[in-house]
Image (tube, rainbow, N blue to C red; front, side, top):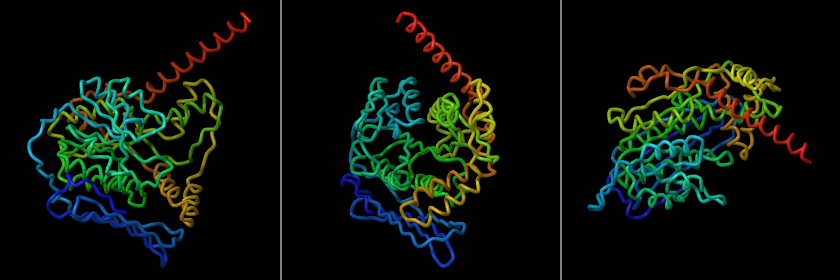
Length: 399
């Protein structure tokens, strides 16, 4: 697949980026090669090939060769770009919308890159942001969104129905190349905690690939690795418990330090203004790491009712992942199950935050705990349910 960018993005020097993942499975092989080579225009050529697979464990080896020679073309003097001008990519997502709100509250000029969609992102305009349509899978749509932008905040990720590499690798490569060629002053990239330790998981390996590619591009950047969002627990546990539906869990002792996306946004902008953090990899983790069972128990207590828990053994996830690998059309499902398997293994997704808080000048007491976050949610939702019941009874009386 060749990705071509407009002629004004021509850059001098040689560009070659090679990421090779190889899995030895009996006598068969799985290989994925991503090559970025110089064409008449700044472009990227990516290829993906797979062979027959067995159910044995994948062993992934990868290497990155330099992209340090990438340089932006000096197209002559232009209008100075204000440091407060930012582009949020993935602005309609769980994290992206919080970045937009925080940026607007702090006085930034916010532009939001969103895909063309049947239902426009009017809420972003209502907040005061400018919305521009583009698609990371169509690189020719990207450059116009970067005109007049100082900083890119990249919160984008692929949709569940898309192949992981379409947005999270190919799209990010195109975006970073465009940002370099257009002279973007700073680039913030959100990654996954411990992505460098799990090359067997495609999504995590792609995140680590992107970190390396961003570093080698020469852009001034900050990488922020995240453990988990508190917001994701609402749909996964809180709502099903209130609706008396099944809650899916596992028997694994994995612990995740969830963080409120509002706190992530606040810490991000503190880091953005600190020039000493440029080029660093930060990890944001919540105050405490929780197991699935502990989260469910907390939700039960706050909701005042028991959960209907369906436990899925980790062994079933592993078997399902291996089974889906046999069929080409389920490869992406297997990739996502691989990520689920890591999340349900005997792993702790957390890091000590003392050093990070000191670096950012943040008081740890200002970071919301999961108990407080869920308590506020259940208090508000239960009050609304109570009010609705009261209104319903009043209507019955009048009828």
